[in-house]
Length: 205
Image (cartoon, rainbow, N blue to C red; front, side, top):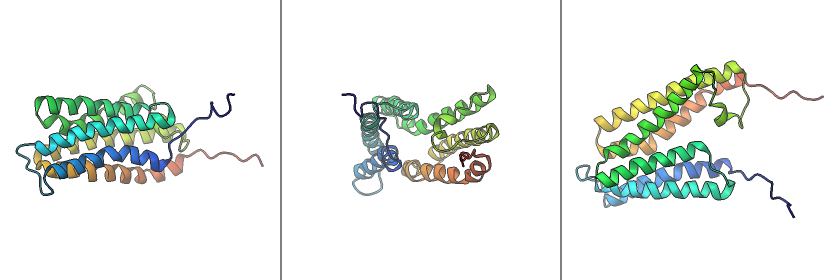
């Protein structure tokens, strides 16, 4: 009767990537389409409001898709979706595009502060993110936590610089095609540290 009931279902790497990037691509596509195929007018923010609404729907759909597959919701996607709902809702309710532009700042600042404050109190929260991929020594986890914490704070600062000093269409492109590549490049740059401190499984032979 119980059969495969207890079998844990996991989202594959490509499925996870699609769920993570899908809402961002929807945001960009909606922004471009709302601009009638040309450069959206940053003065009336109409395209940004349309994109924000589409982003909110896509974020909820991604969260529902993740739950439908794994029957659980991971804390980081949940927290991200909650911020999308809060800042997206404020954007549409108050007709003020500042809120959705600040969302990445708040998100990455929260990530960075959580990692660094946790590290200061002896909690290595980054293990919850990467423990399924590799196992490191305590020194390795601490170094990786420090690096990612600082990186997220710099990413938050970079988002502030871009949206405050560049036109809205430039920020939209940065949000979709700038932040994700930066995160991927930074992750790749950490591989020497990971390889140096990785704990290899001992063979029984």
